[in-house]
Structures are given as C-alpha cells and as structure tokens.
Image (tube, rainbow, N blue to C red; front, side, top):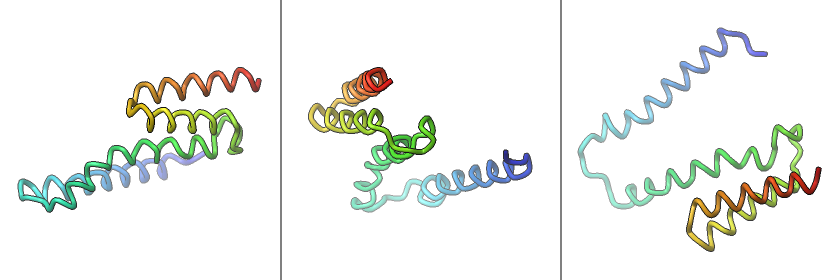
Length: 108
C-alpha cells in the first residue's frame, strides 16, 4: 500500500507533466505553422497510445499474477489481424472481445 503523501506527489507530478506536454504544443507553438514531417508524425500519436495501454495487460495480465496466458494472447492476435484486414476498429474490438471471452470459457 502506498502512503497518501507519495500518492499525491505522484498525482501532482503527472498533472504537471501532462500540462507541460500540452503547453508545449498549444502555448509555445500556438498558431505558428509546423513542418509537414512533424504533422505527419503527430497524426499517429493516437494510434500509438492504445497499443501502449493494452500491451501490458496482454503480456503481463494482473488477472493471472503477471503470467502470460493463451486467452489474452490469442485475443490480441485476433484483434490485430481483424483490424489489419478490415481497417474497422469496431470489428477488431468485437472480434478480440469475443475471442477473449470464448478462450476464457474454453480454458476454464
């Protein structure tokens, strides 16, 4: 268990870090034109965030005590495959969820 002071220090630090990252683009850059290569890279930021959030839950899921399991691995593979083939986010998410719950049911 983490003590309250440490928790608040972490929360405030993360808030300041988040504010600084946003301020760099909105406050410092403002309405100045940005180079095309930077705009092209910024387009992929949202796409990169979701896998970064999901990857730890696939590789080291807390439900299994940090051990990888076939249900989550197969759900990730199915989600990625359906997403690449169909280019449809909802279809990929639904296929991944169905695979996860189906595999959890079969392996239980």
